[in-house]
Amino acid sequence: MKPYYITTAIDYTNAPPHIGHAYEKVLADVMARFQRLNGREVYFLTGVDQHGQKVQKSADKAGLSPQEFVDGVTRHFTALWDKLNVRYDGWAATTDTKHKLVVQAMLQKLHDAGQLYKKSYAGFYSVRQEQFLTDKERGPDGSYGEEWGEVVEIQEENWYFRLSDHVEWLKNYIRGNPDFIYPPHRANDVLNSLEGNAQDLCISRPVERLSWGIPLPFDEKFVNYVWFDALTNYISFAGYLADEVGNEGLPQFEKIWPADAEIIGKDILVPAHAVYWPIMLHALGFPDEQIPKLVVHGWWNVKGAKMSKSLGNVIDPNVLSDTFTPDGLRYYLMRDIATGYDADFSGERIEMSYNKELAGGLGNLLNRSINMAQKYRNGVLNPGDYDDEINQALRQTVAEAVPLYLEKMNGWDIHEGIAAAWKIVTHANAYVDSTKPFGLAKDPAQAARLDSVLYHLAEAFTHVTVLLNPIMPTAMATARAQIGWQMPEGFKVSDLKWGLLPSGHQLGTPVPLFPRLEIAEEKK
Image (cartoon, rainbow, N blue to C red; front, side, top):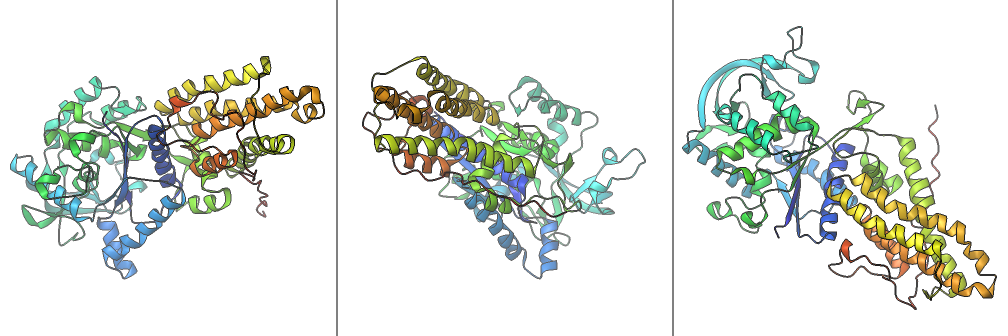
């Protein structure tokens, strides 16, 4: 079976990461871990976009070379991914020589095929977005909106890609491949953007205006502008043209392509990823079955407003992970948003998710289950022969959670996958309240029933540690260590069957999994 290839939009290194970056990477890491748990080999690629005019200007302002500047910003990203336990297989940096060689080879192929041409253009240019603007970007009053920042009039010669030649193909491809974009309703946004006269794509900048980029192999007076640089990382670091350009140490392209999921934010769906990117691949000769799948996530807003520096509402994931632990942040980010839709960040909600759900629900269940087993049976489990309807109901909940979890996770409904696993947590906590093991321990005649209760709690929680492992890998490994059970090498979700813990199994020492936090309210 082809490895599951998952990748994310590479992060533009003109500023440190914010919670949106963290969400995207955690989402990809969770899916990569889930697919491995589902029996798939996985290749997970992420990285950084390091070229561009804004980077060049920021480096000049900081008194650094562009490479020194992007290296410094990149360290913020890699440190955060390490902190949040994001474990990728491939790292894409657009300043990497391996990447540059592939970009130049692609451009040469398109040039030789007549897909690139040079012309002079006069028009309006957004300095902030680093792109030429058309009348489609004008507001009702004829002016360009504030989202474009400074807009200047420029006349210059550049190289263009014959994008317009492939627009009809793209429209037909989108209509014929409903699985191209997730969630599916985003396809309408793309089709709407393709209405009207198609424009060719400017893919260069003169070196006198932008030197921080990849030189065009057929015209040294120009460097490649963002699209054939940043977007190409999805294939350059997956081994595309590796033999042709002499790249080594990369995957075998034909074995992992196409990408099963390119995870991007909704703001870069149109035009970059749903228009430029598939057309670039089509122009290079990629057949329809080799076009990658796009997974489009929404934004984290604050009280309905998009996060922005100007509003002062940007959320720092480093601060959150320091307060709520990396796994606590991972849980919140996955539980409180439906993939593909927007969500509102809430300080009160993340505190409640940690204290009530993780500390009070999950952590407390583990702690009291092991404590009771240690207190009443020295931590030794004995399933015994006792059974009743209460036990059967808990086992049924555990059994039913697995297929539901698989369905939801495979469908990118991560929050619903968590909810499926949480049914076990909720039922097990209620099971403690209904069986009252502390009362059973006082009656020698109830010894067999007490044994079965203690066993059912430990066994049910062991299943939970497997299901929630992609979400909270560190915490679940800690929980398994306390239970005294290691997930075997190559263990899959489908291997979950009642009876993971044998008779006579020795539980470990209980330690609070998520110590409750006392968070002082900010002074008004």
